[in-house]
Image 1 (tube, rainbow, N blue to C red):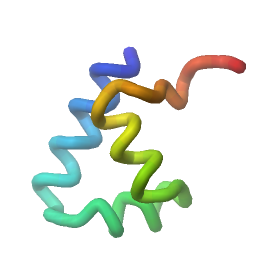
Image 2: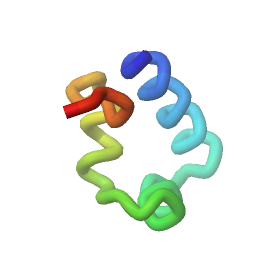
Image 3: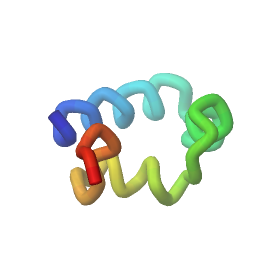
Length: 47
């Protein structure tokens, strides 16, 4: 699921041409969005 979510976020970022907008809307950092896009983080995974 994490890789699919990352691809989805990447598509939105490219469409809107702004990771800043996504970060502000979701209230998470731009760097964390980069981790999700690359598949290094899965925000849906339980700790």
